[in-house]
Each structure stands twice: as structure tokens, then as C-alpha cells.
Image 1 (cartoon, protein in one colour):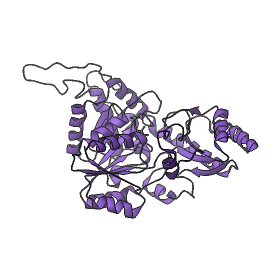
Image 2 (image 1 turned 120 degrees about the vertical axis):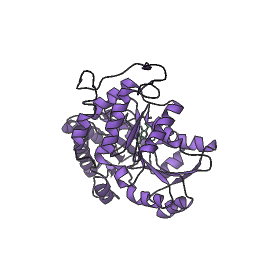
Image 3 (image 1 turned 90 degrees about the vertical axis):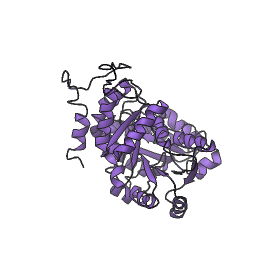
Image 4 (image 1 turned 180 degrees about the vertical axis):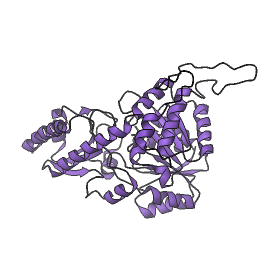
Length: 387
Ligand SMILES: *Cc1c(COP(=O)(O)O)cnc(C)c1O
């Protein structure tokens, strides 16, 4: 455990790394290549796909925050996941949750269909199904908690214990909570991945990813793979993520304070039939959230009363929430999973998965919370008057 607080680590990342001029902000090295000192005398960096000083600084900062030994910066969140999957061979089994991020699911599914590895999809809260999957002695178990868009949690420590017992590696997609609100390596995981596109960068202007490992050699191996398949992160993107990271702890504090207020407000509203937010005491895993997380995050979903026309009216009435995919930026977003993030799913499968036509997802931003409540209130009144 690092003695410094998370705010200190986030702010100080990159400081004192410019040995030439002492720049307070770590400089951006745009150069694609680096000279050799002389014949057969390489320097630390030679070619920017393989290594870049700006990228190394943010990778180190993220590793420190997650309590890991090694960090790898990649071009996107999905390329971080693609890099981790290189550890699998056709004989290996990968166990994934049934409700993992859609882009991850599509990639796992299509690569498994090509025979690159065997894929087992389970509801990780179904103990019997999980135990059966782990009895297959998988090479890797994938975890994503809380899930999108229903904010279901799984017990990271318990799954890690079961996985370790059969020698499986555990990888956790920690995008929704970031190391500020959840540290999977301390719960027994081997690998953490992030879409830095979301909260870590936090300003909706970069697509980037990261991998952090508990074991240094595993991190070095994944760094080798990221270069091998050509998915390492760009210098400018790395700089932007470093800049975003400095305010991550303070942003998340406000994000989740506002999310809690909005969740409570929606929970009481007659035009809302259900709210999914781990901070509500009636959330099925509220106790687990208190135990394994350092906060409840700022993503929430709810079911609107009425039918699909009411959903459309509600979304058209809203003005301070942008109708957009993605999450974790300073601006509040509203999404309708059935027609947006989960539109590719067969309707019956989607409904079975709990993603109804009336489900609405919010990424709560940093606007004045009273303004957000007022905006929701006006739109909800429109729905109430129509049903
Ligand atoms: C967005 C997201 C990803 C993919 O990240 P990109 O940066 O879009 O490639 C992976 N996992 C989760 C949970 C996400 O929200």
C-alpha cells in the first residue's frame, strides 16, 4: 500500500519526471522515433509504438492508484481488453459475465467463434452456474462490476478466491468506478482494465485505455503484447488522460454526491417505477457495495412508468442531459439502452436480461444538482400528465 492519499497520487502523477527542465506538467513527447546513442547503444525509447515517455508517466500514475506493479496505456478501452485476451490459447477457457460491456461481449464472442479460446458466459451471481464454469478450470475469469446498465454487483473477493483455487487469472473491468472507488487488485484480482475514455479522462474528449497488473512480469508481458498487436496509446491522448486524472478524485466526489441526490429523488417520484443505484438501501447488493467499494459511483438507471411513447416524450423534454452514449464526463448524459447501447440485442433476450423498453440510464455530471433535478422534474411531469 502506498502511504499517500489518492488525491495526492492523482495530482502528483508526472511531477518530477522532466529531469531536463523540471517542467511541473509532464511534457508531451510527440517524436515517433529516438536516436541510438551510438552503434548498438539503444536508449530507453526507440520507437513510439513500443514505448513513449508521456505514455510511461500516465501508465505509472494509474498503476500507483490501483496499487499495481505495472501499467500499460492502450489506444482504447477495448484494445486494453484485446491485449489481455492475447494471454489465451485455443485450449484455454475464458469465463465472462452475461451482462458485461457490449463491445467486450462482441469481441469475446467473435474471437471465440474463430477458435482463439473457449468462452463460457455466466451470471456470476448464480453460484451454481459460476461454480460449474470454474470447475472447467478456466485460464481466466473476467469480472465487470457494477454492470451496465443495471448496476448489478458481483463479489470480487469471492470470485477471486474460487478462481485462484483452480489457478485462473482474474481480470476486472474497473471502468465504472475507477481506482478511486474500487481497487480490485486489493480484492485478489491479477489484472485491472480501464476505458480511460470515461471517468479517468472525464472530459469526453479522448478515447484511451489502460491495463494494470499486480505482478510486474505479467505487466511486462502485456506491454509486449500491446506493442506486438499495435494497440499502444498515443502521446497526446496520454497527456490528456494525465491531465484528467489530476481532478478525478474531486470530480468523482461531486459526481456521486449528485447521483445519490438524483437517485433518491427518482425513487420517490410517481412516474418512476424502479431505480437501480447501489447507494439505495433497497439495492440487492447495497451491503456488498459498502464493503467492496469506496462509494456508490455516479451511474444509475430507472424504469419510467407508462409505455414507449412516454419514454420518447420524456427524453425529448429533457434539456440538461445530452442524449448520448458513453459516460463519465463532466456533462450529464441520458441514454435509452433499448434503442442505443443495447439496440443490437434481440428484443426478447434484452428483456430477459432486464433491459426493458422503459429503462433509462443516466451518467450524472457536474452541473448544479438543483438544475438537474428541475430538468428531470419537468420532464417527469410531462409523463405523469400523459399516463
Ligand atoms: C466504454 C467501455 C469500454 C470500452 O472502452 P473504449 O474506450 O470505448 O474502447 C469497456 N468497458 C466498459 C465498462 C466501458 O464502459
